[in-house]
Image (tube, rainbow, N blue to C red; front, top):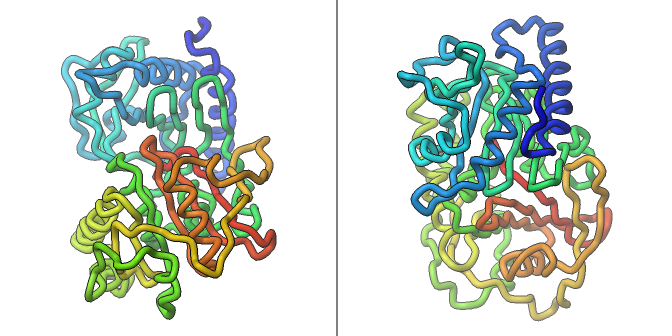
Length: 378
């Protein structure tokens, strides 16, 4: 095996290969049969290496964002296939990127005449399929789908020369929010079937629009949150927008229908789009939209937030404390102040580069807890 041009590719590939192989063994022990073909060490390393260099290219001024999946076209459902096949090379991936930017579209990679090539696109993957997503220049995430639930589990985040192994025990972090567990696949596989996490979908949609944004989640039975908002509110929603709340009131059997899924997606995207407006969007915990474009102000009876506890579900990274301004710009500082003042609320903050931070009050530590999610993928 030749040396990769991107040195972290080899070290990351060995961890990824071992992890997926272990998952396949456990899946077979559970009696699962519809599993993706295993990607060997050379395949994993090569795809990581090529994807890294593709992420650094620009095509007509745009940085490529792509998802690569290792499987043959016959294992895909209604694939779109290319003729002839395309070489798995950085320049080819960069040229294709604008056509496959839509979330959920994967470029299929398989061997042809002994060489890896791109055979086309697919939106459906078998369980435990090796998937690599290019998020931003030099930022890659390796993941795999778990069964037919549509959930993905992240394994490794590569950022430049850093290799971040996702900690499978991340859900045991004190006060770990349900949304963090769901974002990284920490919730139990049995809970994935037939469940919908609206805030996860909102988080993903917020990342997709690429403008950054903040979503404040407040309790339904209190208006105290308004004391931490500059008045008057420029874009108040009256009556509250209830489309997501109404859809979530449907029975589980109705949620299985494609029409319901499409309606929820459209409603989520509509709300997430509002987070691109300057200011924060406010939603209560029953999914009712209350306002957007709001300006956060420190409560008159509250002190300024001086430090937050920061955790990240990555092996080797322990909890630390820092001033909230070190986490990002004004958006992060304002969100931390809001949660410091409104301790029964939470704040989801997306950076323009797709990174995510979830702020919640920690009763255990008696301070704001910032849960950092370096790469948000589902």
